[in-house]
Image 1 (cartoon, rainbow, N blue to C red):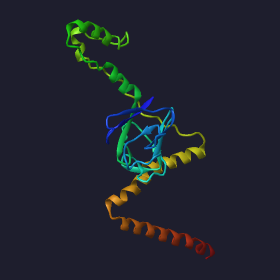
Image 2 (cartoon, rainbow, N blue to C red):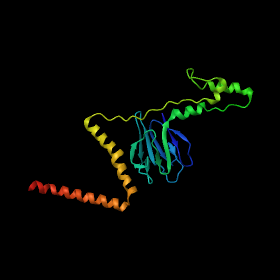
Image 3 (cartoon, rainbow, N blue to C red):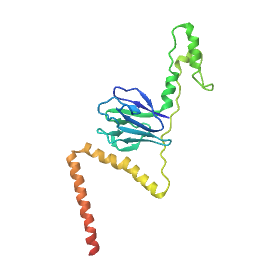
Image 4 (cartoon, rainbow, N blue to C red):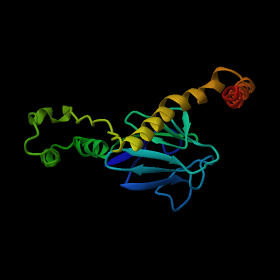
Length: 215
């Protein structure tokens, strides 16, 4: 299972578990994940959790949904990606990670009479085959957590479907990020003028094709 870890905003530090299927994000009371931010819509976006991938989908929100700074309508979330719902940033982590950390983080009591009970409780948190240190070193346990693998995305079967999948991946990962970056490199009016110029040239070239065939 997976969870989101809120990195900014008044809820920073909270970890919210995701369920399989659709998880609605927004300010509304019926949302699965409720965010405290005036810029977040009542139903802002959705996270769809599948066995092989996690998909983020914007619900036509006013302030948009971003993955690694790029505004998206829908896109894949991978480990390490930073997702922004307006001004609230979070990432996706395995749910077992924060549960394991919480279970092994136990403070040692100050009274000697309760030390043995607390020590026995702490030892019971580990499986029988988990390597344990001597009792006087239990306060310095440095557990090694398993590193989860990346979310695998399998291409659909069939030549035509596979071609569409490759085109969609290219658009989401290469073409659209480049287009979104243009306003950051120059003024928006120059970007708009460039698109208009490309459109005029393309229409002119297409209109010349019938004339070339006639001649």
